[in-house]
Image (cartoon, rainbow, N blue to C red; front, side):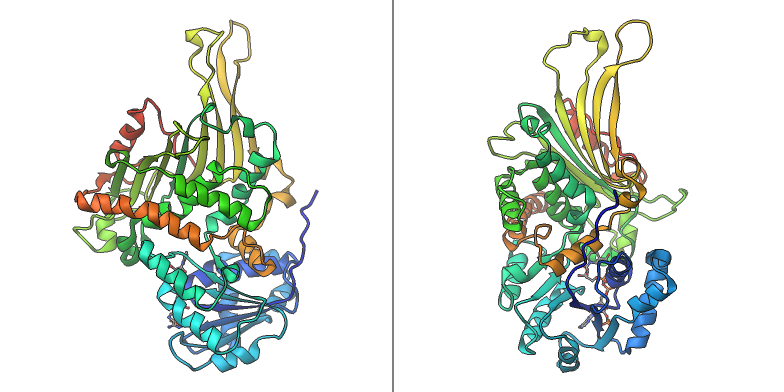
Length: 488
Ligand code: NAP
């Protein structure tokens, strides 16, 4: 059964930072694919805006190149590609100046959904919000989309929320965390709340612990200056891993509606326990001059030989509520690790008694929710090893890898940005972070960072292509547990 594409209403989308990396790699290709899929109406308008001088033709050429490089140009026919490019326009605007705003206002259509995508540094959010407002562009159907990083700590996040709230209602603000737009993340909710099988077991009585791993093989790349001020905790844990933890741990919302879901996520963040110093391991990757992706160390990459910023973090936390008391959550993320892999493992407890005897070994069920690559869900179950010769047990996966389980046309689902941008147009905030959620996440993160700063903690070096520092293994082994392997 092919998935149904429901077209969204006609819209105008303004991309501030329309010539930037994010627009080129993600936003324009995502819009193109939705256009080809028939979801974007033929009269939608996409207007790029940035300081550099371009006309509409030049911006179309920019988008054309972006699609060639970062999308499948064949997703549409040649005529389709041209039709998409004809939807594009461009205005030269400096967020901090007055020129160009009247021209932008003239290009917008009356009485239709209007979305302003802030694909610029957060230092410009206030300027943009203020000018959109002062130039009379805010209507009832106006939305703004803001990118991470949403603040550097609690005070800056509060300040940003205040700045945006001065001109927009919370219901108009879409804070993107692209992890939430992944098919598997929504499937996690479908699996949890759409089946009778899992929810009764979803608690500390049956779940031994939960592991959330987001491993990358890349280094800091061209983001060194930003990353060195941020580190893995701010760049990944405070937002992406925290969001995954919320969806795994939250209570069932009364309905699948934006505030019901976000209320439950917020309760999880507020119930997160203190993280003790010996439950945190920070690391920095070493140089690998000989490897296939020969590269320098983290400190080389950020140009700061004395940097104490972590490119890896593992930590153990817990949720102080009835459901999860006694179930640890182990989180880890890092760069230059052995494989690119984002996965949540729900590790169920061993059976209380083995009728097969000690020699059959320990066997426990594991539900693995893989976000990338190869999105899908696997349940590890124990069966008898086939063949004669007594009762030997083995673990096999019940595999729901989407690309194999679903028909090809259904497995070709939209990527996170496609889904999220369409949700903005539809006005559905379920997969976007609310202001209070972001603040609560920082309120948990800030004392952890302040703690290691006060202790002058120095990150542990780790080999590129490894699973991270040895201490991260010890962190979990002390509890007589093991990390699952990092595999592609
Ligand atoms: P980028 O490549 O540096 O692009 C910045 C864009 O903003 C350019 O189009 C730039 O064009 C425009 N701009 C800069 N100053 C401006 C001003 N005063 N007025 C109007 N436009 C201005 O940055 P990016 O990587 O696209 O990132 C954009 C935002 O998304 C950042 O907040 C970043 O943290 C976030 N983000 C990026 C990624 C990613 O994969 N790239 C992922 C997640 C989040 P002009 O110089 O011509 O003005």
